[in-house]
View 1 (cartoon, rainbow over the protein chains, first blue to last red):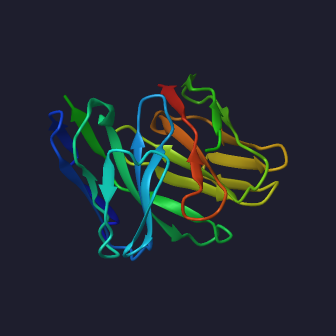
View 2 (cartoon, one colour; view 1 turned 45 degrees about the horizontal axis):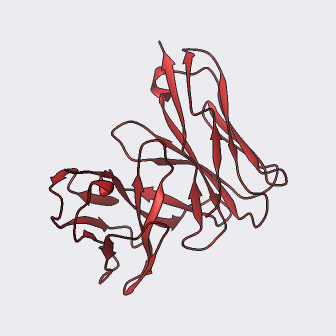
Length: 117
Length: 112
């Protein structure tokens, strides 16, 4: 049971390049999320999905795209990388945790550190 | 977009000291309050999820309290150890898939 797996762990991009951050989970969770973490800032939601075939924008979606063709996979695509997208990206899923009165808790991937030069 | 504030931003304590920090959040439309522990070079891990006013949760030397009426939660660490060094994140939930708002975290360093 691997949980949430993100790849790559590190990547350096040139301005204008494109790339896809991969996220896959084996917990059969319906809800999946992409966050970015910038220094001194809280985690900001980029996009989220409540199930296969359904995606929606979060707080900071500009410059990103997502797809959710299967329950397991939720890739995040950067089409034209910009220096402002230098950040640490976290994929997360939500499942119910016993003993928490039905409230959901996030399970995070290990993160992907992206630098755009 | 809701404002979730954590204080202090960072603190250093000596091994063996007890410490606590605060998460402030809007008191209206409350659904749940999450605490996560985030060690450097690792991913955040859930510590507690609290939903009821007056809730207290405990995991080993770490405990948390919740006051939904005044909009704050405290995280306590008793007898801090170097392995407690991490950033502690709180997140306020309105319920629903996209209604979780994170604070900027409190970075704790425990000095041996």
